[in-house]
Length: 234
Image (tube, rainbow, N blue to C red; front, side, top):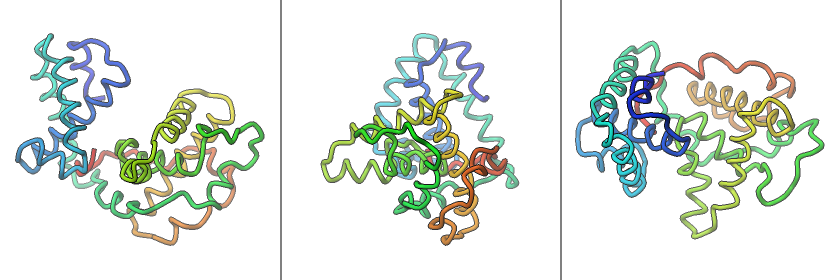
């Protein structure tokens, strides 16, 4: 939405480079809001500095050849102006705090998977742990690679490869329009929208109980989840 001009000048961006563009934009927004050096901004956003630094290196590689840094600054200024409206602010920092130790409840996972017959139980198949990381990313607009679920594995020197592969299966399924994984991805998105509302209203009880009726999860998600956000997290 905001980066059309930048994409036109710098050329098409891969999904991987788009991830780094988003991260760099978050750092720039934090710099505009709070000041300070980008390592400080990374810390405020909960992004490990080595991760942020890698994104900046990739953005230099993408933007330097076409001298597009001015276009990048202009693109970031547009959401910054939009975030100045109190009516559209969402406190993603609060959502991250509420969900810092949240895990997908077993009862909710069972309901989300109700009616499916073809989902496998392989190590990289959709799982409650992968759903936890994906829903956390959707609710907080953070990077699932730095979700509490995956960070916990990384901190205990456990392998994250299988969980990341599982999350990526669901992300890929979300771009398709058929199949049980696609339907599951849609249900997770709708569940994330409802969970976001619970976070915003500090309703901890709603974070633990299953939703009633999976058919409701196959309907359009609440509009409030897609409003503009306050720049508190990547």
